[in-house]
Image 1 (cartoon, rainbow, N blue to C red):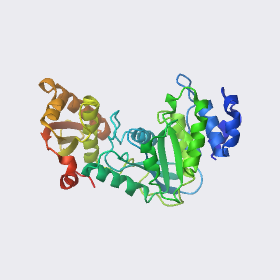
Image 2 (image 1 turned 135 degrees about the vertical axis):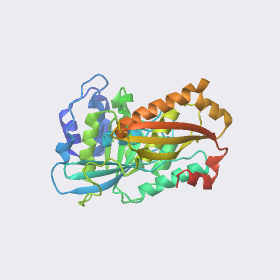
Image 3 (image 1 turned 45 degrees about the vertical axis):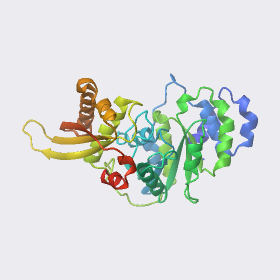
Image 4 (image 1 turned 60 degrees about the horizontal axis):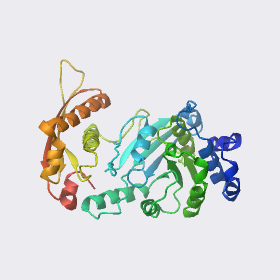
Length: 357
């Protein structure tokens, strides 16, 4: 049990604790501490103490290890990765299954380098070539890591969560991250859920949190550090991802595509970068020219993406360009096209040609 959790458990006498006293006595020490942390955690409107994550990881031997962020679709994995890295490198959207690739985020703090891997949500509903590729990515990510962060929604455990949990190999320490804690209003009442999770898997620790809470993110660094081996760093201290700017451009277009089409557009739509190059410019220190094609499966989907008089496609392009200019610190010229490729998600060769494993 980590010091941060011990302190919460020792010092807090939260409202509602008496109602769960008997159940707390039946829990393991780690579970009881997790319950105390859940009940005493700040709710919306309460100020968070500033997180000093560096203080927990500044001392000791040099460490470096790989941490897989795993869970069902749309559970908050990409939001968590971006928060841990400190910058947006993985796309987020309300639409399920927006992460398609194994995305590596890097954060170096003090003597420790954390290498985070964000995976697609494991697919159980449709056996398409695309979903088989996504599931292969998940399996590959969890097979050779030092630590697994199993992300679930606090108070919830679905058949999709159970399927992901069944993939874990013995011997790899796994933390249960009860995410979206800010959605739980009477937190003491989820004590039975914590007990049931304890019975499902021998989790190394239980971490109740919200990926949007800086204090929770700071605490998570200290928890993860002790599971990482003493080893030289893999990357330079200022590197944030091993993905190229071309890849990030594709992901950014896809994020805006899903954001502005909502639930109208099937998630089988994808983005292919046709051109990505840097040019000399007298007026800008960097000038990047990008041409991207949005691939959809039907003519009706193409019309949906383009929108009335091209307004939706224009908005997707404008917001993508503005975000890429911030990420790349460059002037960006972006051209967007929309093409129909019927049935591409069921075609293994075409799935591979679009960059999937």
